[in-house]
Image 1 (tube, rainbow, N blue to C red):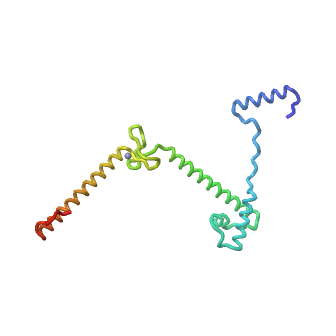
Image 2 (cartoon, rainbow, N blue to C red):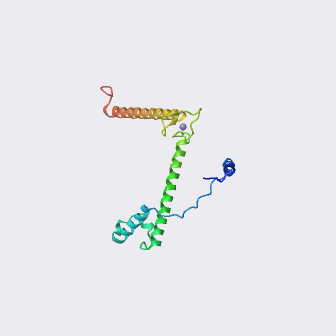
Length: 180
Ligand SMILES: [Zn+2]
């Protein structure tokens, strides 16, 4: 930018730096242009119009909802369809972003025990990797439960065998050989 005098240049630069340090805008904001659909979007809407006229059964969602009730042969109708299409894309983009953020939040959250849902801590060490980890307390509890289950299963089998042996004894008399 040519300046009339060095003084002008200095003044300009001084103001510029002062505004920059104060984190104020240093340039005039650009006039925002009104939204306009992209060529691709216009072409897509034109394709939907073709489908609606010639092959209505090929018109799927969201195209069907977007052009519903619009006269696409007029500029206004086509423009409105583009506007609705843009709104649809924006909403989908926002939803995907939200989902990605939720996934990140889940990833960042401290690992929890799959059984008792308690978060991992120095007192509660998780065994196993990633999403499928169980705390040591629950592992011990599970081991006890399994041992108790096995014990009771063995006991009931032994009881059954004893009852069976007693029945045979009563029917056949004393066993001639040891029961297996
Ligand atoms: Zn646990």
